Image (cartoon, rainbow, N blue to C red):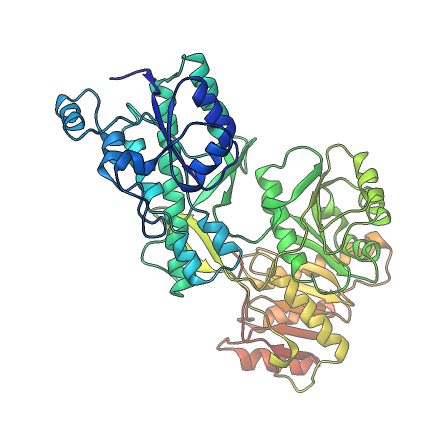
Amino acid sequence: MTTDVTIKRALLSVSDKTGLIELGQALGQHGVELVSTGGTAKALREAGLAVKDISELTGFPEMMDGRVKTLHPKVHGGLLAVRSNPEHVASMDEHEIGAIDLVIVNLYPFAATVAKGADRDEIIENIDIGGPSMVRSAAKNHESVAIVTDPADYARLIAEMAEKSGATSYDFRRMLAAKAYAATAAYDSMIASWFAFADQGVAFPENLSLSSKLSTTLRYGENPHQSAALYLPNGPTANGIAQAKQIQGKELSYNNYNDADAALELVSEFRDGPPTVVIVKHANPCGVATGETLIEAYEAALACDSVSAFGGIIAVNRPLDGPTAEAISGIFTEVVAAPDADDEAKAIFAKKKNLRLLLTGELPDPARPGLMVKSIAGGLLVQSRDNGKVDRDALKVVTKRAPTEQELKDCLFAWTVAKHVKSNAIVYAKGGSTAGVGAGQMNRLESARIAAWKAKDAAEKAGWSEPRTIGSAVASDAFFPFADGLLAAVEAGATAVIQPGGSIRDEEVIAAADEAGLAMVFTGMRHFRH
């Protein structure tokens, strides 16, 4: 097997010109012949480097608006020939095919073209054909050819050639080949996804291509014995926790990312609403509130469950101000996520060296489309995002008493929060803040009882005369299968109920609500969150 290969000829064809001139100069210092195409050749020449046009190599001009320029035997023969195979060498001699030892290629900016909202014709023109073909040919023959697809690797290539007097090692070429095939796989995945979802409007294509790039490895996963990493999608995506700018604090853990994402997704439901604060623990909200100011909202959210808030994750829908940061600093908090933060808030948090402050910019749109993927043994479960939303006009009053205006507001607030609580979910809310949250129980009755118990505990800690469940609205993420869960809400003091409806015992539940004097509305939509 060939080990070190001296680079005598390099083929360069790049859409991203970053670092191109420096690379060309380094190659020139080793006496490498440069062969190039179109704009790449022009940029190299303007920098004073000697370049041979691809047409000189192939004997054919670039044609068809540049669609055909490298798809030629003198290119792919020079890339694919096995140098140790006498028959291959004879064919090269017979057809005057010169060996190509290095390929520098990055592909047409397909993803960027889609992201800027280009029309279909422009998108199609930015599907690279010759580039991926050269990349795959060079990578297949990595025994003899080095293939660089990422400008970030130019420095490594220059260092490798400097160390080996203009050559590359087999291990280096093998590493580059692996990156090259990953690059073409990601590129084809983006194209396939665009055709399926954007161009054809298919919900679930026959072959689902998922492509992501490693962002960072994490200390460990959910538990210390598990390894973990963060990947970012290749191609257009909504900005979220994964793209947030970390201002301070320790690196984020797997659980930090998961919990912060849950907090951000919920607070984004209120991105066009009044100042709102969400406190999350183990991916469940333990306190959510709106207010005239952020600090008012924070104090109300904290009061819902100050015990669970310890070591929690906080997300807000407004730029963070100093007074709110000061209040948050009153207890141990793992992560705070905000669209932005003023200098006073940053200075206050700087005193808490372990607290992570994440600035997200614009909050993600809760109504955005997309797919959610969960791995199971032997497969993947794929579903559309739960971007369902109900407004007051879609609600159906099913009891004798209709909700008051305030009860209706509390119902919708509780319903919005319940969407982000692990099922079975029960949420009591009053006056724009949660009163009690019951999450993740095996039956709905227990969730209702736990939420009510939490509200009583909160009232005792705050010194209130009664829990905030008195006169509250209660939301259930799915229908009440029996009247017992509803009656537990009555016992807690709720006066209004919002739930999907659809149980075979709806009439029994409605009758129980009427007997208790409750107002109840059906949404016709459930929000299971497993």
